[in-house]
Image (cartoon, rainbow, N blue to C red):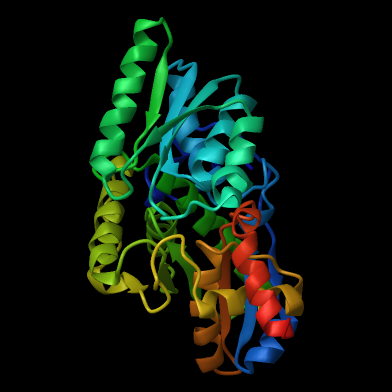
Amino acid sequence: MTVSAELPESLGRLSTMARAELFQGPTLLEPMPNLTKVCGGGQLFIKRDDCIPLAFGGNKVRQLEFYLGEAAAQKADTVLITGAVQSNFVRLAAAGARKLGMDCHIQLEERVPKTDPNYRQSGNVLLDRLLGATLHSYPEGEDEAGADRNLHAIAERLTAEGRRPFIIPLSPGHKPFGALGYVVAAHEMLAQIADQGLPVGEVVVASGSGNTHAGLLFGLRALGSPMTVTGVCVRRDADQQRPRIRDRCAEIAALLEVDNPVQDDDVVVTDAYLAPGYGQSSETSLEAIMLCAQSEALLLDPTYTAKAMAGFLDRARKSKSGDALVFMHTGGLPAIFAYQNELNAALDARDGA
């Protein structure tokens, strides 16, 4: 997919931003008829960013097109990124870097209290290694500024060796290149909704770093859409996540040199599905995984999309027959294998084993 020259002026400098093309789009916007029947409310649809064809895909591919575009513009030869042990972002950063002929250094943070060998060695960790990334560890899990400082220390060592590193930062306060991918996605999704004549009033998305949630919300408002964007908190509670999304929208506006179209009451978040915490499964998230697999052959990951889907299902059950709701599937499927013990236990309990 390329950034269209037809993007409206309300999106400012978006069409001029440096961008590395990592996939051809758009991703599909599909109906979910079986899940619609189960929920008994409005029509349910899904935006299939889980099907982006780069190293198991997911929402981070859209974000990385702009980060890696900036890296290429700076003539970087090495990308540095930090994330949880089972981070989808770091896996796709390694994939995107390889596709562009760059090396990748990954810093894995201890965000989730798991010693299970599947979690430590399978899923995204296995893919990181297959992609040839250099792995580093960081002992903290809730220290964004410290994790970024450690990335800078690694970058300084690489620079001393004659490399040209580019850092993808974790903490807020940096240019939100990643969010631009979902400003573009908003434009893409609105075109699909119009083509299909769908009465979509709400889209539900996992809200973690905030780039996907904020980019989508900013894009919709900049394009004149009043559609509700409900962010399901997957890492922080609503009181922490709400200002993060507001700030990210303001940063997008500054980067694109436009007025911020997002108002405070546009930022809708819920932490009703967050417990017991980041990267930890719950009864409702496991139920969502099994229901979606067995009604739509739709696979979800335990960390992000299962919790977001639990929220989506509750919204769907409360919707009216004339409504249409969209679930933004952000991918993360390799984590299924990292959580296989929990998933097997849930399946055994369901089957009475």
